[in-house]
Each structure stands twice: as structure tokens, then as C-alpha cells.
Image (cartoon, rainbow, N blue to C red):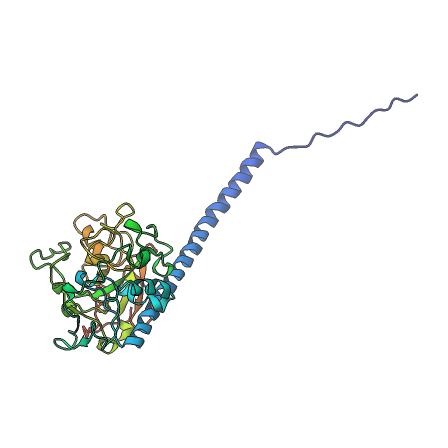
Length: 356
């Protein structure tokens, strides 16, 4: 009788330590190759979305101008509420409900309808210096200061069109205000926009914050601040004598000396006022395109870092997005020629320059 001998089962062979190390090394190499590529794709997507946002804002400004024959006032004086151009164009960027909430709450200083009584448009000064007279503004402050209760808290609305996806600020500033990464171009003539009692030093100094002569009659941008009680300055496209394709309307902003992740009074889309939390100072709603205020000035640079609060800048690499008065959007490098950059900041400087 034969004995039945069962065959021995082969034990499965495992990976050796060397094989495992090789596999891990290959995976690490693939990750090292893929991560930068993914980051570049994300950056490209964020830049594209940002450009689309600015395109919508540019179209909003043009549609506003087509309706009312003037671009919106950049920002009203505090006695007229400090509501800004971002509020004025709400109906033209598919935010009619937010606009109506404010309008129905008597926040009526945000829009100019020539010939409509309170905001009758009148000529003032020389060509390029113009104003809209409002009746006894100090005693007609029914609009109030930009606040987070007007229009059932409309200023708290987070509006994606005002948000750059690359920016790291939270979507809401102090007291819940909806933020913006896009501010108006006040112009390039800083000589008329500084506090005469504290003129800026070379590479530094102080830009005016309150009670100083920052007014539309001395600004040469296209979205201008009204810093007196009874006059506001809207601009006609025909007054942009440098050409609408050569003049910046709105540009990007991001973290700077004062406006950091921890300092929550960074810009909001509704407007600004220097005396109220959540809005900041005048350069919290506008920026200047002067040679002393280049794109993405490093806020940490000793001596000149404070000027970053006056500069356009972005969280993108090597530059920032801008929308021009004609509605086209361009990405401008940090290395742009300083004089060219200054030239595209004015509406009527008659500068000669090559296209950026």
C-alpha cells in the first residue's frame, strides 16, 4: 500500500526591502514631478478666474456709463455715505437683489441720474475738473455711512465677482463685510493726493487719510474719491483723452502693510471710511499708479513697506491683473517700465509710451 504524500505548498514570495525602496523612490519622483504641474494648473485657473472677474467689473462699469452717460463716482464723501463704485454697478453684475435692498433702504447716494434732483449733474471748474452738486449734503445724510445693517445687511453679501480665488484673505472683513480684491485707480498724480502738512519723503512718507485735499478735482484717474461735502466727480468716457484702451480703471489688491490676514479691515466692495471699523482709510478703496507705488511692493521692506498700502498687487506670481476703461483685461508684470506704468494710471496725462 502506497503512502499518499501531499505536495508541499509554496509560500508566496514577498517584496524585498530593496524592491520596496525602489517603488517608494519612484512614487516620490512622480510626486515631485506632478506637484509643480498641479500648482501651475491651479495658478493658471485662479488667474483666469480673476481675469474673468475683472472683465465682468469692466463690463459693469461700461454698462453703467451707457445707462447714465458717466462712469460711477469712485466713492462718496462720508456725509454722502461713503458708498463706492462697487455698489453702483451691482445691477450690472447680476447683483440686482443686493442693490435693490440698499436702494429701498434709502441708500440713494450710490448712483447718479443726471437731472434727477438731489444728484443733478453740473459743470464745475475747467475741463477735466467736474462735479455733481448734491443739496446740503450734511443735512441730507439719509444714506448713512457704509454699514452692515443697511439693506438688511446687504454689505455683508459675499459676491464672487469681487473675489480673486488666489487671495488668502477671508471672504468677509471686520463685522462681516464682504471683501473685495479689486480697487479703483485714483490716478498717478500723487502731488495733489498727499497731506500738505506731511509730504512724502523719497520712497516713503504719508499719504493723506482724512481732511486732506484728496478730491476729484485734483485726481486724474477714472474712479475718484469725493472728499468734500457738496461735490462728487463722475467721469465721461470722452474725458479719457489718453484713450480708454490705455487707461486702467480697476486693479487687483492683496495683503500689504496694514491689510493682513490678522488685520481684518481689508477692503470691502461696498465702499470705505477712515473712521469706521471694517472699511479702513481712503487707500483702502483706491490705489495709486505712481513710480513710487509699483505693483506688489514688498510690505516687509523696511522704510518703504508702508507704501504697499497704496499699491496694486496680487497673490499671483510676478504681477497683477487690471481691467482698462475699454473693458479689456491685461496681466501686467512687476517688471513693467515705471514710466509706462505711471502713464496708464492717468486718463489725461498725454504721455507717450509703448503698449505694456
